[in-house]
Image (cartoon, rainbow, N blue to C red; front, side, top):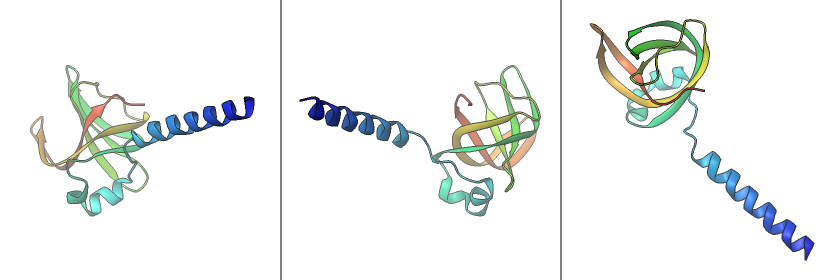
Length: 116
């Protein structure tokens, strides 16, 4: 009886872990996104790196992330703008032809979830 209970518990735990992992967007390198941005357009992805530049006001703004393979601008509408030098991961959707604060950005990640 105990053996059967342990098996059921293991199956439930593995199933739960699989569901958690399946819900996470894939982490991509900035170089891969920049090589073929159309492939990622409109899809939710994650990138991680160090903030190298940022500007904004009143909770909205853009910041640049360098992941070691390249840099990408991130538009943050609801989550604030981190300081330069911060290490973080960002989840969002790739957009092309974006303008903010009088500047144009060819490719940008629009942040959709709070950073971690």
